[in-house]
Length: 465
Image (cartoon, rainbow, N blue to C red; front, side, top):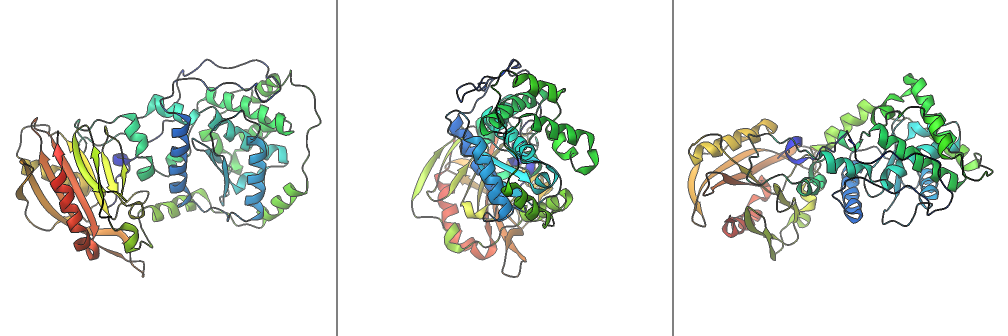
């Protein structure tokens, strides 16, 4: 079952409005003298770490990353850690990886994952310029710009034909679903000019404390601005120029004690040489590869998705249901929920598990018609999905229900790379207020009989509020 992006993904906001007063004035030396992250934020730093890990795992599975034990990867990681260690004490887990992509770009996720295109290293003339890009991304993490954006603008635009008002759409639930369905392009967060100014200031201080000339960061960004043809526009699209970058950085460091700044050493030259030997992909090629990977699930063993004999309870505001203890819940008590074995889901698809959602019909109609509406909504993102028989009336713990068996292609690929068939069971349960809870049980045809008892036990445990 392919997942419609808007159904499962939180599209992290690209506009940050009025979240904090603009921080200006000279910086002070010392690890304790960093600007404090400000502005409205619904998420703890610990939650940011978990969000970052979850999203990074999804992104890394789709991106053409350089191997970890590689001259370029090792160099960038060492440089990034050298900068990050100058931050005040924090729970973030900074991790630096290199994408084999030619355009100049970098991005940072909440909690510490930083990714940078090899094209950025190829374009940097000095180590300080590269350090400036990394310091700028580290600063976005430290200033919590990603979750500040999400807190202000967390909007999952879910089609009304699928999601009614039954389950709600709280921000917590939306972020909890990040690990299941965040879109590839939404990882490259766009920042406001105020956020860029903050990242410039914090990045400048990181560079100074690590021994690099902070002005190199501003010079590199302004060089990109003036060299639009070299791939800089991709970076500038998500990192808009706050204006007068060079003068703002110069003013910010004006009261820092003078020091002898580091110059490029052999490590930088060796990494540049290694990067020059690579054949990086274009942005279009990377996007195409990501799309191909996102809709397919491979190398899944039966043991990795088999439900345990132990069940635990999910207490949602709209329902309660028991599920295998070794399966994972994506969502929270206020959001649509997916329950699945981690090995059975990918960025845009689910091969094993159950989707649970709500729907409020726009007009009074039969439960069978409501089930048909839900099926038609699912079919929008799964055109090959077909009903395998007629809807049948049922009862789930005393509540009227309609059950429809569906068939279609599974995202699971066999050893030859061909997708296997899938069998789904759509169960639509009436609520007393006229709305419904619907459950879609999903399994590849070869494994359906193995999972059928688990699905039946889950249905029998369902209690609708």
